[in-house]
Amino acid sequence: MPNLYLFDVDKTLITNSSDKSYAKPIHNLHGLSVDDDQDFSGMTDRLILAKLLRNEGWDEHQIDASLPGLITELEKTHAESFDKSFVKILPGVVQLLEALQKREHVLGLITGNLKAITKLKLEAVNIYSFFTVGAYGDDPHNTRSDLVTLAIERAGFADHIQNVYSIGDTTLDIEASLGARVIHTVGVSNGFISTSSLSASGASIILEDFRDTDFVLQQIGAK
Image 1 (tube, one colour):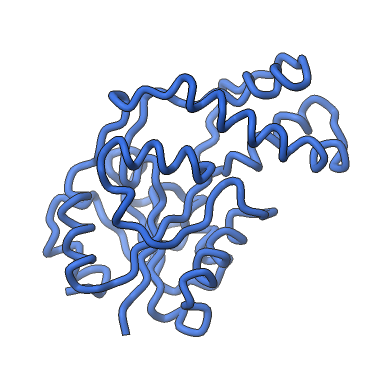
Image 2 (cartoon, one colour):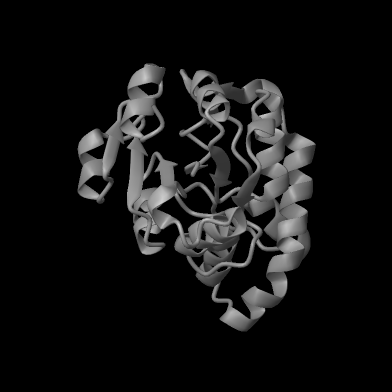
């Protein structure tokens, strides 16, 4: 049976120095000026928007009612400002994806980005076509763990959790995977986080980066 490899996007597969603005859609639709100059690493677009509104004193009913419109507006404003030249693929990513595809494993995405934004980013570096399944920031969820579970279910691996590998660059990625009962949680540093932090969060496999394809394949059970 093939394995399912679920990849986070930002700082796991790519870097993107042109970050999206969460303040703009909120201002456009509701006239509020919010501070989105914060570290949202590991959070999803949906949960970030909700957090910013909660900080403004909105209750959960107001937030739930506004999210569909804000998600659509975020998709629109990001597409308008998107510059693909800012997206850079991280070392070893293409070689790893090609090797996994050649071995007929299933490649998927687990990301806090909206699906349309994910597509823009990954098409900019020509790797979107590698992925056949995923769960995204505009899918229904209350926690990031919900998205991991959803991606696994969509891929048909709910009864084969032992064949699922979830790969991310933050402690929140690891914690979300553990919350979804994933056994093989892979933390990749890529120079953005210490390997000791990833290990402390419970990652079962720790990688510095994806540069050595053969080594990575061996570590993640795909050799």
